[in-house]
Image 1 (cartoon, rainbow, N blue to C red):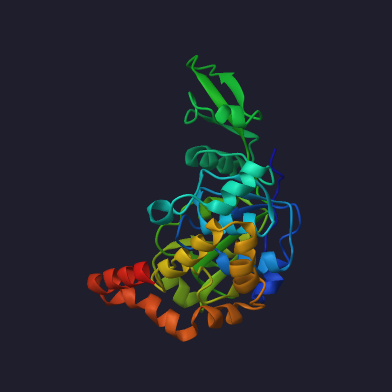
Image 2: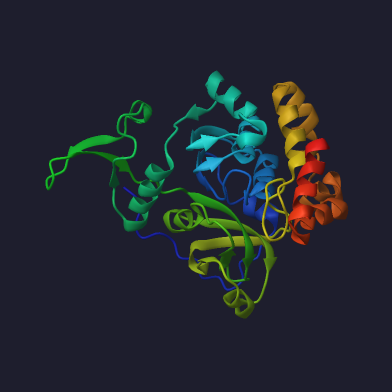
Length: 319
């Protein structure tokens, strides 16, 4: 059953450095990873976590890609409670994730998106479980012996009971935040709002830290300050995934990543991990490595209209 009550974070200035945020994730933690697929993944924070050598993590999320794949390659993950891990229609399967699961290094506890939603809702409400119908008739039940069957006392229907999930830390990248820790997510929030409410702490990176009055004037979904333990301003902190309206998905870098991952663990370590994770001791060094201001400007060019967006996508396909 989820712990109650959860901590409340009231420090009026929660701004920290990226490495300080990574240090707030302990070995063996269950981490909820924000964003989804190729959008708004907390990539700079995950790279900092890998540089610290944090191990034994369980990842909770909906549909993800490079974030989970990278944690598998870096040896940080031991269990994946995701509904999907892959590179969508662009590149297909996630090579590092697949190898880690097939070897037994990572336990695949696959679920579905709605089951995850119900489990987070249970934690938010302080309940030990929530009933679900969504996985009946599938093999998900065999993957989760912790699920229980119940006959509904009102309808006589058979229901499945999924236990609450209360992550230790939610890792979120948002567009905006203020010094007190209020976050503003623009575009689809995916499961991030539920993660913030269900987790014991939120650790966040944002594109910009702005005054509270300006934050309140912008449209989007809010994560209130009292859920957030700390945040850092990390421009391009979601790279190579997208963070609109700041920058598009870096298809060229994603292609480079996926090509290295397909070559096997040794090649991936030599051509990606050692270079872009352990070889860049800071986020600023990482940005310099991927092309600095030039790549930032290129990924912002989607704003110039549909033709510019398509040209960006086509250029990246040929890169």
